[in-house]
Amino acid sequence: MKSKTLTILAVLATMSFLFFSSQAAPQKKKKKAGGAASAVKTDAAPVNDSDQQPQPAPAEPAAQEDPARAMWRIEVEPYAIFGSGRPGKGAADFDKPDGVAFAPNGWLLATDAKNRRVQVWDVKTKAYLSEFGHGVFGGEIVDIAVAPAGITLVTDQTLNLAYAFIPAKPGTVGENGKKLGPYDYQFKGTRFGEQGFDKLGGIAIDSRGRVYAVDAHLNDVRRFNADGSVDPSWKFDKTRATGDTYLHGCEGIAIDEANGNLFIASEKDAVIQVFDWETGKYKSKLLGATADATGIPGGQKVFSGSVEGLAVAGNYLFAVDESAGRIQVFDLSNPKVFNTDLAGFAATRGARNGGYKGFFGHAPLVNFEDKNNKALQQQVKNGSIIPGQANPPGYFCSPDSIASYTDKESGEAYIAIADQCNYRLAVYRLSDINRVVAPAAAKNNLAAKGADEGSPAKGAKVGNKKGKKKH
Image (cartoon, rainbow, N blue to C red):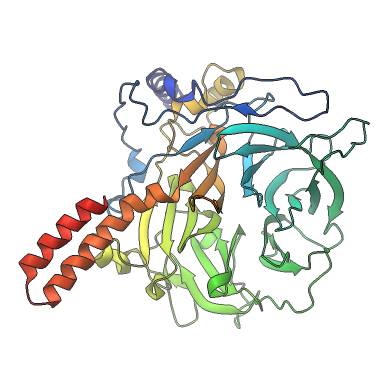
């Protein structure tokens, strides 16, 4: 009965939201003679297209209806959706996207796990550019990271190593004798295969080219120099005085160099642990919960379950709350962001001027991650149901990795999320998020200033006026 209900829901959702994927996948084009795929223009899902009839926002599943969390929602739509929304092997089909990272020039790179390749997109033009790695990857590829010099590392959690690629220089000839194009990458061998990893997944590279690799089974983070050699100065605090590890299942990693923080997602604890970026020492700080005298997480946790990908953009840390289909947002400039649980943030919710800003994204209307629903899985496989149509943009199904990039010319920051079971990528703009979050805080601060000056009514009036102008 459950299977039939989900199937009916999926079909209805497919009919209601068909227009969302009509422009999401680019047309296939043959490769040029030089071996590089042509850049193909593809538009984002028309979330705010005036030519389309607005669709009512469906309610989230009852399991996710938690009033204490729901009141923190940030109402923002995706800027773009990349991918066809269905499993496949064609250009811009995903099966499944897992890791995402931005190259120094702003290209978005995404690991396409089951197709054993990496796709390349341009977030500013919304164009599919190319792919690379096909025929190189031997196991299950997971995460991806790009060094300032452009060297790209892709992790393999089956073989416990990383594959290295570099962008092809103009005029370079590939192994097949064909000239490589502007979007091609060259394979430069593997790294870390001899380092004894048990489940190598998350990876990050800092501004100095040093590589941070996360082992989910060993609950460990290791650092390597730009040439791949072990960094002897790195002393990661893996174990507490009690003998327990600080991390329990980990993959998501992000670096906040400005504040000297290394953030690691501890999935089984539903929190983010904080270490020193330079030394690896534990900072006795965490995000998403309180901590007792020994540092053990407690209180009413911000995250509904497993914490996946992490990314820093502006003063914010973005964290993927996988089970709820939400992207949690923390203000790193506020010292009270650490060691505070959901209840502790409650007083700042109205103005959003505390350490926790809230979240964006919805749980899926249809959970395509449910492996026990054999009928639904078969419908996805034979194409009778397309996940990217059943779940409209912004309704995440097992989101995983997240990455950010700030464009130097415009100052705009882009945040990309691997929407795994919807077989697509979702891209948001920081300016859109700030338009929702910043006015509330600015309005509250102006009102408070007016009250301090002895005229509460006048202060409130000025705050409302300026808030509207800024909006």
